[in-house]
Length: 132
Image (cartoon, rainbow, N blue to C red; front, side, top):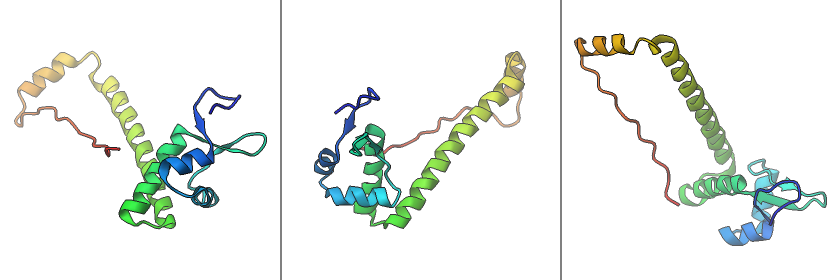
């Protein structure tokens, strides 16, 4: 279902409850606890976005699969958000660092890398995401 204000796909509480096999009161509880914040229509109807559904999946995974209570879910989610923000800031910092120290000095860097006592080979970092 689409709201008039946005082109983003949204879902009513009944559709979300049915899709995830939970009672609508559970969604209302998550909203009261501040874990989910669906948008509202002028008539006060709840609309859940794709982002809300991703967050709900995270909540349900912690609750159903790991037995985490609501307070724990809130703490874990907040830490997850902070870590993602830190990763973004660190990536930006590295880009600025590269611009500052290596732009225009690539050949010098390569030369020093070849003569280094400890050989450097770039490693790749793998980020694993859960299968859905």
